[in-house]
Image 1 (cartoon, one colour):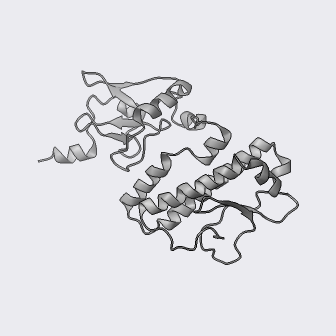
Image 2: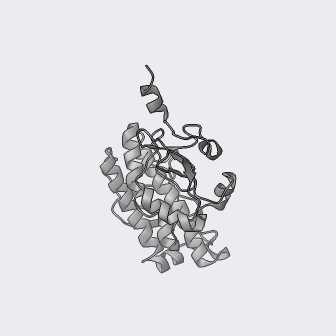
Image 3: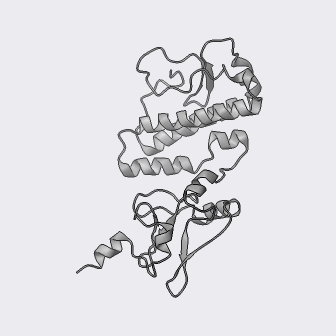
Length: 242
C-alpha cells in the first residue's frame, strides 16, 4: 500500500535516499513522539495490521495492500498480534527491527536499476544514519559474541605491523575494542569487495599500497597472517610480476 505520494518513483541515489529518510522519519515519529497513539491503534483484536512510513513523513497503521504483487515491498504483517503478549518496550523494539528491514527493502527495490557503484553509495548513505531499532531501543550496536567465537578469539580481528615488518595481532577484549575500532576505521573499506570496516571480522593490511582487506576476500586467516613478514595484496602481487 502506498498512499503518501502520487509522484513517479525516485530514480537517482539522492532521490531514493530522500525517500528513505522521509519514510524513516515517519516510522520514528510513530515509535517515539506518537508512541501512545501508535500503541493504541495496534489493537490485537483487529485484523493483520502493518506500519507504513510515507514519503511525506506521515505514518499509518492499516491493512496490507490488496493488489498482488504490491506496488512496493510490504512491511511486517500483523504487528498488532504480539502487542499484549510482550513487554511494551520489547514489542516496540521488535516493530523497529521489522521497520528497518522494510525501509531497506523499499530503497533497494527503488534502486534495482542502479549500477554497482550507485548501490554501494546508497547503502553507505543509509548506513551513516542510526537504525530505527537503535533509536527506539536507545542502544548502540554490540559485538556479536558468537561471531567472535567462530573466529577462535574474543579479540579484535585486525592486524598491525611494526617497523620491522612483523605481523602483530592487536589483542583487546571485544567489549572494549568494538566502539574504538568503529571510530578509528569507520571509513575503511575492503579493497576487494568494497565492504565497510566491521570489528567482528578479520582484516589484513597490504604493506605496499596500505589498503585493507577482509581476510576471507584474500584467503588469509589470522593464523596464516602471523607467519607473514610483509603482506602484498593480490593487486600489488600482479603489478610486481614481469
